[in-house]
Length: 184
Image (cartoon, rainbow, N blue to C red):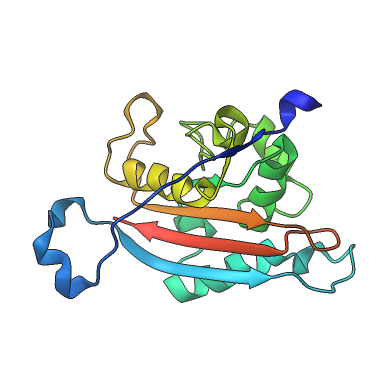
């Protein structure tokens, strides 16, 4: 339904990134590490082969690069321009088996205080879909969480987090998927 879709709106965002050698110029206590950043492109997979979804493949690559897995994540921010997308992306990120995302959400596991809180920021459905700022907005939320600065939506003890962001459309999946893993 219409209330389940985020409106498309303008936006902008910025972040400070630096190499380890330059970190001395900043407050090291506030630093958050980028463990992996992976971008995947659309494919010609069979629509029924959900195990080869672009987001799933990019997530598996990111986990391998980070030396982590789905069970190491304390929270996630996912691209949910429609409410169903959160269910799909929890499956792609390996938080549950393919086809079990709805059950995962219903169980409360993806709520703050649950096993793997997803979109504690409220996601795109709650704040609109700020083109050009969506992905960095997700990173900002994860950084705040990892710094223990997220206020009433704080995920207790957050040490590792993952962002999934998709863009465009190619056949039956995103044209591009970006997965970022951050840690404290």
